[in-house]
Image (cartoon, rainbow, N blue to C red; front, side, top):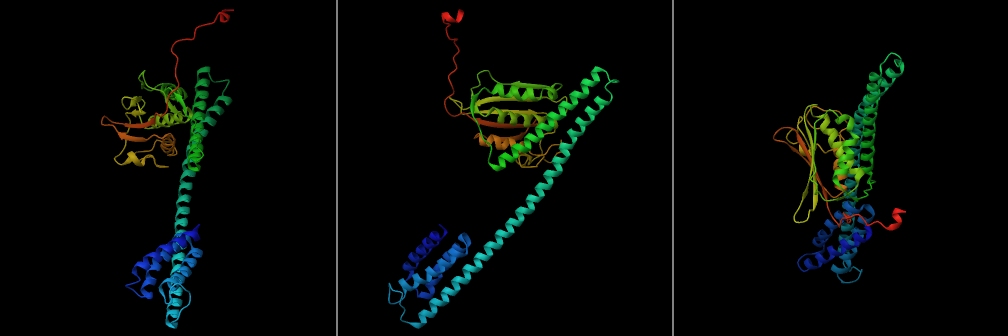
Length: 361
């Protein structure tokens, strides 16, 4: 394919040279081919560029030197000119190819350096964030086992509950890491089904029930909210990450709200879901950068690997939606995402089917 493109580019250069032939000599026409040779060398490598150089000289000889439309050359000076042109074309193609290869090598080196930096950053962050819940789980369980006889039932339950909560946190951290790996590898499979949004929100709130027990949570989901084609497991993960993010950056007495509205008239085209809080909010400029990998914003960190919002963005994008963040005028931050509604939802029968006589047997 690369050699075919080299041939096509030489043909195009030949057409341009044919237009200029009445006004210029062969040395000038050779300049028409040189940009094409440089293009072939930079895009397709050394082999195609050598082919383009040889074809260019043959085209000059065949079409633009007397006798025309033959490879025979009457004038020895023209032969020398063609040889010089061929040598110049080969040198240019070689230098261009080498420069391109050096640029590619430099780019690969830069990518490797950045990859190594990100890897070290990830390992540092992950090791800290995994070690913290592990330490809590180990401490709570060891205290329970060693002091079982001396501890009252309430203290035992409290220690076991702490161990359970931290193990859930550890599980979510590992889930985020796995989801990030799947997103980057392009292996995230979306299995959409028509779902009511309230069920997905309810599942996410149930998963975080123990951590939300003492928090003020408001949920505003209109009863006429249409069904949405979505992957319930993945969208639940989005809600979990957004709620965890709100928990990290809000005081215990600050409210957190979840709401959803249908967008579009007369038929809704998408559902917009909002998770808002009254916490520290976002600094100017963080609205976009907060979704970048390992970015935790410019405010004091609440912990985590900096992958939660990146994963939210990836999941929403594979659903065909959008996600963004806004600073709230009353304080705090709001994270919104949309899920498009396409296709025809399944028919829901409100009337129960009539019973047959054998049903009562």
